Image (cartoon, rainbow, N blue to C red; front, side):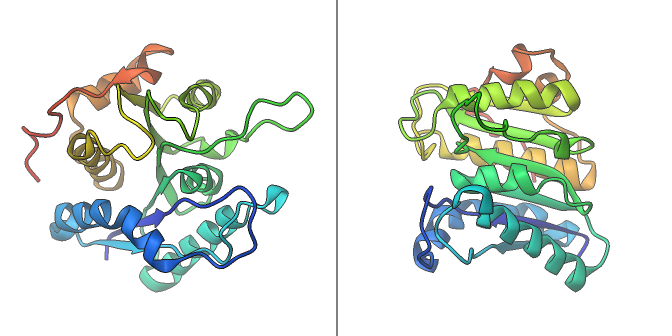
Length: 230
């Protein structure tokens, strides 16, 4: 194997219960299949991560710790290969938090659950993302995780790392089901570019190069990916 994608599912803010493997698998199954097909010729390994606990659990940040452990396992199994962390909901926050692992070269956070701004609490860290390519995707009608919070996070991350972009999926909700194909192609395009140096689509190139807020509020066009051949 020459590279790996680790899929990080969602969860709950506080819970010591064991996560449901069926629920976690369903949430990322379609996206995982896309990565398997698109990366087969490159020798891409795709694995789902099963958390120890269903919740983030405050300062314990259990899913982020589990993501770090999973990257260690990839290195143990495959050696020195680049890793991309792909997370949804709470998994998006875990991917961003664990992105500082030395084997990680890229992060994709979809509809990430991020904490509210609180002057009494430390801001969600961004310095660990220096040197990584980062893609954040969020539906503008998300009623579960606030898209404005992911924009603010992306703006802070962009200040320390120019390789950050964020796409907005207009009229879509938390599951990004209204534009599933476009979101899937966007993720594939970004990940293969980050892991293997494939040529990125023009919208992704433009989003990475554009100054904020332009590159952090890039609209995902309907039909994105139809012209991409993988």
